Length: 76
Image 1 (cartoon, rainbow, N blue to C red):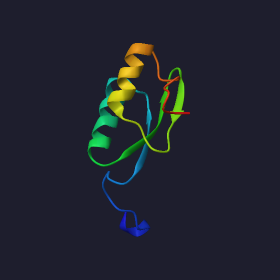
Image 2: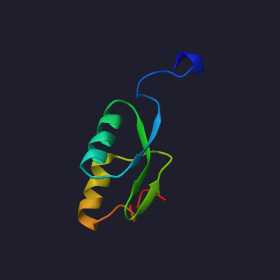
Image 3: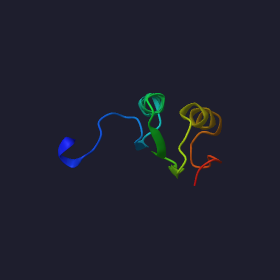
Image 4: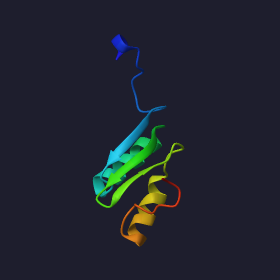
């Protein structure tokens, strides 16, 4: 990391999650709790993006009630 002048750690970095099942949800939750930002999520029904990031709990609740993430209103 030092060779490329990249800071170590999660904080301050943006992430994209592939799959938002049990593992993807918890990965997203831990990333956000440690200062990272989830800007994209890819799932079986589509992919979503938000420059400002997602709240994993809010997205998980939406997915649970709607059956997928594709029409999450706070994303494109």
